[in-house]
Figure (cartoon, rainbow, N blue to C red):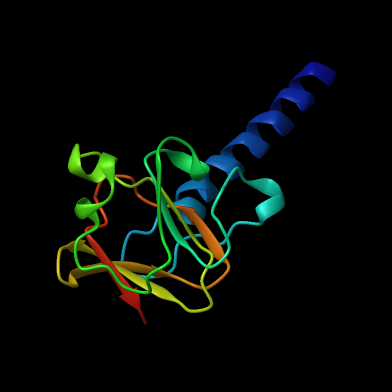
Amino acid sequence: MRRTAKLAVTLTTLLAALSAGPAATAATEPGPATATSRGLSSFSCDPGHFCIYSDWSGGGTRCQWTESRNPNTADDCSFIRKGWPVRSVWNGTGHRVQYYTQTNYKARVGSTAAGSGGNLMGNYQIRSFQPQ
């Protein structure tokens, strides 16, 4: 009886975590990336920079910019040139950053508030960005 109750609690907790997971980590429409506390993530982004990563939670290859806008991220980001998607972002700037799946600020896909970041859907590239 005790094992059954423990199993039920574990399954309930697991189901709650799984049902909350996609809503908490994936942006399905334009909007901010999930805010993440620096203490709970592995994001490494210099203050004043906008950073994109090839892996979840700030992992993999990082590309970062001090410029407030960039019409073509492939110009200076190796994993974008290789065709890899952006899986996470960190905005260390003092303003919200909008990002786009096409160069020259076309096809807006989302934005991230200053001092926050998180995981994205992970199935597209950020090809340009600018302040909102």
